[in-house]
Length: 136
Length: 79
View 1 (cartoon, rainbow over the protein chains, first blue to last red):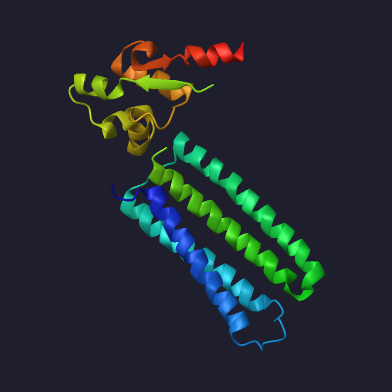
View 2: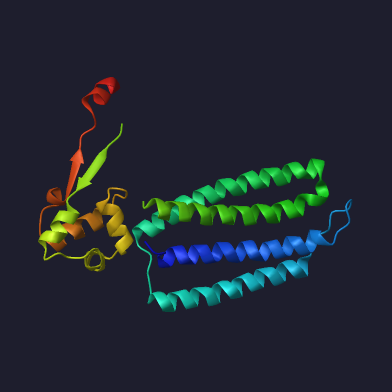
């Protein structure tokens, strides 16, 4: 069975966010020295977020036009709600790790927070794809 | 306590001039994938969607969905 509009939307969002934040973290840590952790590059982070939004909008317009419109039904909403719960737990775990980092590696706390959000979003998308492939 | 709901939607579709899943989906306001998931027993629809399905085939709700009672042994353990 081919991908539904919802699955294409989720795959696209997952790839976009992984690509964008791989670029962000690679640029941040790629040029840093071995001992000093880089500070948060706010202009770069804002650029990445804006680009993610723009690419998402364009991508979703394209797939919506190709799909001819596919409104979400009750099953889509249920899968989304279940996946938000999983994303919440992942985010909570990441936040606890970030809190712990204030003790052991305070310079990494901001990065841990950003990474927590990214991983939680990925967890949200991946769990949605899992439920869709499971056919529930 | 594990419960199970069975349905006759596939049979009813074929009896209704071989209605497709897509056609049924459009009439009850869900996606074709949701109809597929309901037929396979992987997803239990809401009451509203259940009643819409019954209305499409013009049959009582009980003719579309059947509720299987949990095992007697499991019921006895609870008491």
